[in-house]
Amino acid sequence: MTQITIDIPDDALAAIKSLPLKGQEIGDGLRLLASLKLYEMGRLSSGAAAKMAGVPRTVFLSRLADFGLDTFTLSRDDLLGEVRIAEDHL
Image 1 (cartoon, helix red, strand yellow):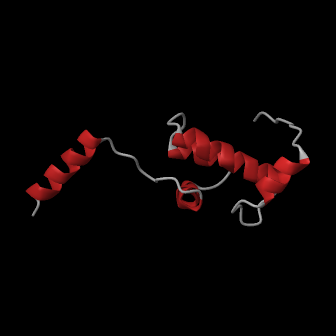
Image 2 (tube, helix red, strand yellow; image 1 turned 60 degrees about the vertical axis):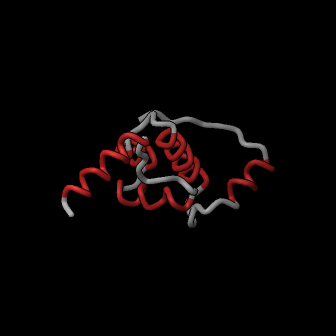
């Protein structure tokens, strides 16, 4: 595993401390935030993002809502396909 050291300005640190990180250490919180963003951008799967954050996948998925992120995203076509499948089972 690679270890990275960063300098954080005091005002940015205060903003980080005000986020819903539930008592996590700052470094752990930053890892979580980075993994959330990479997941949101579609660069990491939920499993890979959870591993990066150092938490179980179920915990990672539950933390998405804390930051206003969707657990699953569907395109319009995917959603319509799901509706058709659901209608076939009614």
